[in-house]
Length: 180
Image (cartoon, rainbow, N blue to C red; front, side, top):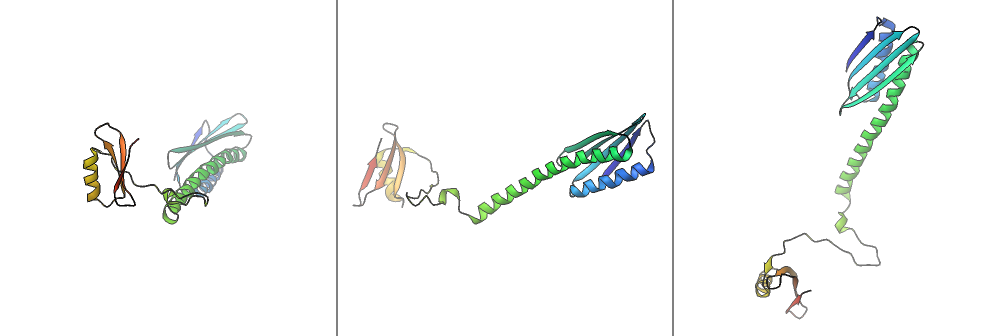
């Protein structure tokens, strides 16, 4: 990870540089090496020590924290704490996405598809069939196509009155026609 430490109106002491480096390294470990770069700006105005930190992570997330305190240690600690809260929130989102993706994959692999699931024991089971086009044809054409195929029914659009009709095989071997 790239770390830029900039001092505005102050030379950054080596102790502060070391403190920032160790704290940022701890943040990087919490992010599982997802941090790309960090930019730290330290400013001193009279008795106030200001620290602004921006951490760029994968997925174009920018975590930022700013703090103002009477000492460098306190200012750095407070700014890092703000970023750690953002890290926990971001990691929670990443983990929930991973869990959700794993759950979807597990559902696809292990359990039956929703159209194959059993209905409650008090009613019949509904199994969704694949879709097929409803072609316009006459009743005679539908009967000829029905005889050629091995389906138990045929849904078609009646060419005479443009209504949907169903042709099915009856138990006695003849063909039945359902028209609305």
